Amino acid sequence: MGSVSIPYVICSILAFVPALVLHEMGHAFAAYKLGDPTAKSQGRLSFNPLKHIDPFGTVLMPLMLMLMNMPIFGYAKPVPYNPQYFEDPRKGDLIVGLAGPAANLLPIPPLDGSSIFAFFCPVEHLPTYYKIQRYALPIFLVVVILVPQVLHINPIGAYLDVTAYNLFNLVFPY
Image 1 (cartoon, rainbow, N blue to C red):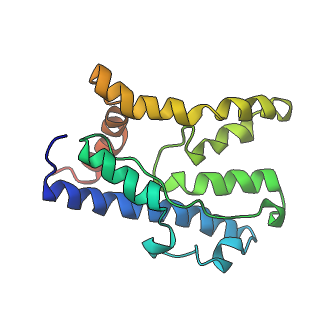
Image 2 (cartoon, rainbow, N blue to C red; image 1 turned 180 degrees about the horizontal axis):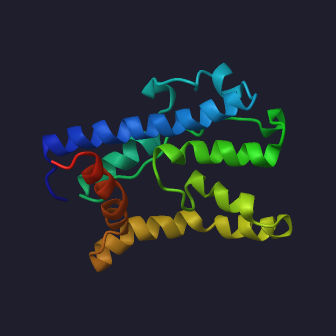
Image 3 (spheres, helix red, strand yellow; image 1 turned 180 degrees about the vertical axis):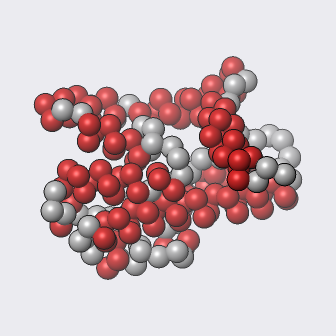
C-alpha cells in the first residue's frame, strides 16, 4: 500500500462527490419531470451530498481503492422511482436511466446508463439481456481492479484520456 498525498485526496473528493450528486440528481429530476414524485417525496431531489451517500459505495469502497492507489470508483444510493407514473413506462425508464449517466459519460454495464441497451433490445430478447446483465458487475470489477493490477493497463484511465481529457483540453486549451 503506497502513500496517498493530501492534494490527491482533496482533488478526488472534489471530483467524486459532485459527480455522484449530479448523477443521482439527474435520475431524480428526470423522474420528477416525467410525473413521478417518489424521489422528491423522499428528499432525493437535492444537491445535498448527504442525501445520496451509501456508506459502502460512497465512503468505504472509494477510500479503500484510494489507499491501494487504484482507480477510484463508487456509487451512491440509487434514486427511487416508480415507472407506473410515466405515460410510457419503457420510454420513461430509458429517460430516467440515461439522465444520470448524461452527467458522467459512462453508459456501460453494470452502470445504470446501460439501460439504453434495454430500450433498443427487442422485447422478446429482454429476458436474455437481463440474465447477461447479472454478470456485468463482476466483469466490471475485474476490468477496473484486476486488469490494472495484473496487466498494468488502466482501461478506465484510457477511457477518460480519450473522453474527459480531450474535452477538458478543448474547453481549456491553455
